[in-house]
Amino acid sequence: MGITMAERNVSSLAVITRKSLFFLFIVASTLFILSWFFVLRSTGSPRFIDHKLLPNSKLNAVIGSRSSGSESQKDVEPSTGNRAILVDNEEEEKPSSSSQEKEASQANNGVRCNTNEKVVLKVFMYDLPPEFHFGLLNWKPQGRSVWPDFHTKIPAYPGGLNLQHSIEYWLTLDLLASELPNPPNARAAMRVRNASEADIIFIPFFSSLSYNRFSKRNPHQKKSSNKVLQDKLVKYVTAQKEWKRSGGRDHLIVAHHPNSLLDARMSLWPATFILSDFGRYPPNVANVEKDVIAPYKHVIKSYVNDSSTFDSRPTLLYFQGAIYRKDGGFVRQELFYLLQDEKDVHFTFGSVQKDGINKASQGMHTSKFCLNIAGDTPSSNRLFDAIASHCVPVIISDDIELPYEDVLDYSEFCIFIRTRDALKQNFLVNLTRNIGRDEWTRMWKKLQEVQKFYEFQFPSREGDAVQMIWQAVARRVPAIRMKLHKSRRFSRTVSRKETGLSRIPSPSNFW
Image 1 (cartoon, rainbow, N blue to C red):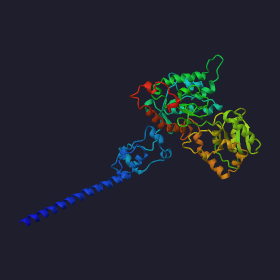
Image 2: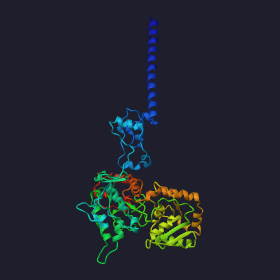
Image 3: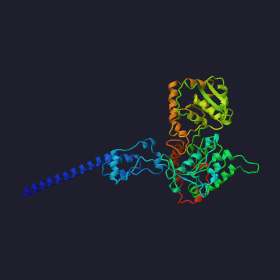
Image 4: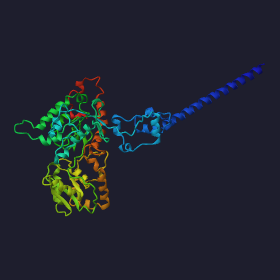
């Protein structure tokens, strides 16, 4: 009987052992399967990606369109606000009419989410009194509106050299046009009436026009009309709740003429400026990190239907303008002495007087290379006249800043020469003469491609100067928002007086 009990115990132990091994096998298998599941999930295999965890972006839309029919496309929303600013425009312009998208549209009861739709910059614009904008063009308001009626005549901007700094005029027209019953389809910015919905707040002051027309003081005036208007502007803007809320960080103002906004800039500098260059600004007031460089409006005629060739443009180098300048412009007179005897170089004094614009147009249209030399400030309208003429720009300006250079490679259609090299005997003519037909033709063709980026027109068109400037502003918005959010970190624990938001902060520590 003792033997029988021992045999039973051995048999029971064997059963328990087998059950334990089977249980361990199940546990090990389960862990193995789970481990592979997490490996596949971490490598980004599309079938294991939870779409709701992805940011609202084009990647989300692409994955959603490739997923199975059980995953509803309604989870994919179009980008809004600042996100659309960072979207690749070229990809957005591609038409989308695949059968998958049509099926998704039907599955969602006919409501289709168009992920290719462009989201424009949202701009809140102050309703400043007309004396700050169109009133400077001798326009008088009808009724209570402070803006012109686009169904009647739109006030024209004065011609001549005034036009080169007319940037604020075109931007303001573009915002007003966005509110029309049938606004232009192609636009990069739209006006919104609620400041809390806006990406940027625009101050519509025609500062360049104010300087050009009203900067001279009459004998009976203590201040010029331009200075009086700037004082009024500062008082008006800094009293607005939108300015007080952000300290001006999310505001935008145009001061394209180097001498415009000379008085107000020291009060309004926390805003983003749209400038022609930084030549007359201290770096703590205006800089490439904070502000936007916009092109001049060219004053010479665009070269339409340009069929010229390397050989049909007989002039090697062309320059016509003011030769004797102050500050960095000394290089112009030095180059004049170096180049005046070269037979295929045109280097003379010129102005808009005595049919100067037409003569400059003809000269640039028949030249291979056009000189853009620093004057009183690093930039000049001559660069954009050259682009409109498809005359390859030769830029001699060490401190120049260029429009849209974060997205545009100017070396593809411009030649840059350091000032110290340009002043060497024969350096300039030897360099340009050694550029052959093929290389020049490549740059000439590129100039024709990029020319539209520098054309101001109303209504604005796809990729023109107006829309390119708005897009450049849009690329500043994320940095503006980040700095604004950081400034509010301690707003609940520190009083307004301590945070400095009740006054205009010092430029040295604001940005």
